Length: 239
Image (cartoon, rainbow, N blue to C red):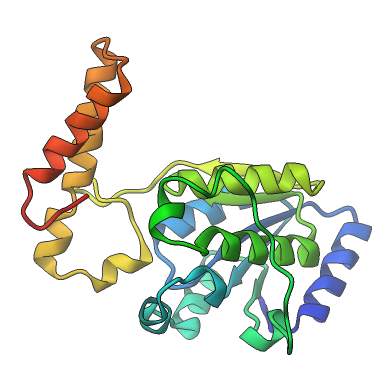
């Protein structure tokens, strides 16, 4: 396994792989890897000749500086984790390698980014769209793998790939959960033991809504109320 830090080197290698008719599977991450990321890697290995994982804590998608500063980082541990599962390449650039001096070009996907998470995290999806565009341009993967739990992000990236003409198929991989039902996330490390246990209320609420749909409920407002009522029953949770 090779760790690549330079964007030019990554692009050159990707071109060489394509000339050799190798299919490239790409897993973009912010690092702090867990079993959810491994599920993406395994799917990439099933579908691709070569698997590239990027590890880059992208500053432009954090709308709070404290969140960016505190995001868990451990490249040594992440690299060991990926080597164990025989990933071919890690692309782990420094910030200056991605955002050079006087960088001023950003990608904005209209409509899809203006609701839900886009409201509470202004600028987040602009940062996501920009870094994904840069990475897709650099690697030109045949397949890119994303976790199902980031549903709005997936919709944004699919639109981006379609509108900008990337010849990359977006593959959505099922959410991996803890035994409690809590979706695996790098940020879970920042929860206390009690908070981590109580956070499963989100999964419980979604299950109740799913059961209601199975039983015939189709009114969106009533389904939303089912979710809200369940989450409100947990004092540590709020919508």
